[in-house]
Image (cartoon, rainbow, N blue to C red; front, side):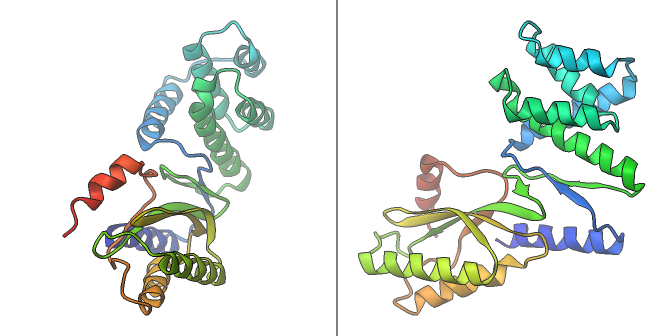
Length: 242
């Protein structure tokens, strides 16, 4: 928990020190590795300064006959210019991509185009906050994993306590629960919360409230914005108790 919390604190401090109040968060769940591939490609394309015609690239993007690699280039070229029509074309494509393989790429092109447009219109420095789980507006998305202290199964009463306390306390803190699953001896949450929210004391407080009824939740928990852990990954982590 502390590594993620420290990272958020440092990021908030950096933005405050530089006086930056405009930042962009990727809304889609795009793996970090693919985000990095996109940005390397984007920088390469911008550096080469390839001549192109916007409308021709739009036609290529929506053509059913063009190769995926060529459409990647079109998306990247369109995202590189401060042009509203180019942005709308990317937005339209991303809403229903002809090639499902380009869903993540078009998501990245869309946020890149938004940054380029915003920078051109405002004349201010724009910041992109990268996260494998994305976010929405000024909210970040995080995955949290909690387990029983002794890895024993939850009782029905404990399930009720967890469900009641987490929903109530997080709602009070303006933290949105996108998914909430209680399994045999662990539970997971997918959360959206405002960038300037200090989430650590909130989650610790909810765990403390639940533990008043028997100290059954492990105070150590996983909290990450990199990926949603699969059941197999969770089971492997739980076996490493202690």
